[in-house]
Image 1 (cartoon, helix red, strand yellow):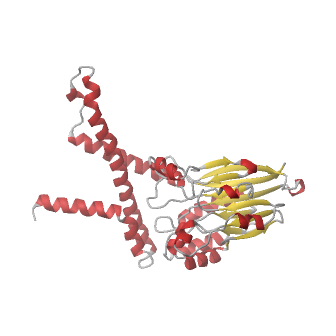
Image 2 (cartoon, one colour; image 1 turned 180 degrees about the vertical axis):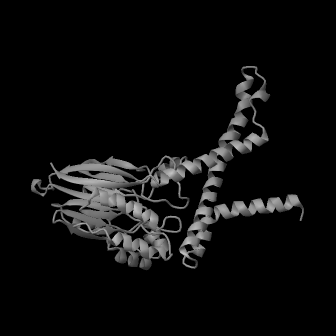
Image 3 (tube, rainbow, N blue to C red; image 1 turned 90 degrees about the horizontal axis):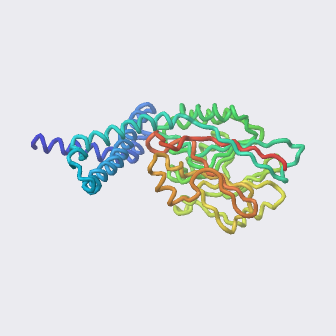
Length: 351
């Protein structure tokens, strides 16, 4: 094979490795040491992120090169002064992608605490305040191991919650690091407990393994059932659609909400930010995640097309409120771009 052919083959191999990184990492999880999996995950995912951002930046550069002649010709200016050379058409996207990956790495580690205060007549004045902390989309896995969990737990402890809820995709790997992550979560013992629901990645991992992790971490796993906290707040957890599509879960409709009665403040825990019209008015607050707010701009534009309730708060008739978390972790590349990670502190107060 010629040098040129060898170089092309290496390039194809590197491109394939980048885009197949999630599959390759999944294949080695549980079969190699944690540190080796982490190194492999970081290298694979960072390379994957660089390639994707390089392609996006290249599209903008090529669009400029394509439209520049038409724009410049109107002003009768020498077109050669505005055209990018082949070298620049490579270097500009490469530099932009590299800078985006570096910045995105720092943003992924800058966990923020968002606050939401809700006044309700269902919360008696004498109770004072009930503080719920929501975590979502932690994705404990090859790239997000126990060290990342420690940062989340530090932020949660600082918030001093009465109850913690995880709205899906808490686990996303099969390595030995899961035991350490579960031990760290078990150290947090809010007075009214910890509760978790399924996300699509709990089903990808294997629902039995996910359930075992929840138990070891001290979470009560709410799968289409409710739990009452403080005798005042009803937590209603429903399975994610991913499990339903795989035949491992069932969808709870308005009936599950209605069955819990109407005197308690009702929080619907649902991984995907989808609101059923028939359920509006049957819950006071829905907590969701899943979208990551796109995680990496400009992909947030695409995810918003699929999930109009993308991030933040949305109000509905009948007093129902939806909060969509950006998530505390990442899926795939350990970077975020214009979508910083969060935990959410919800204070329930009387009217």
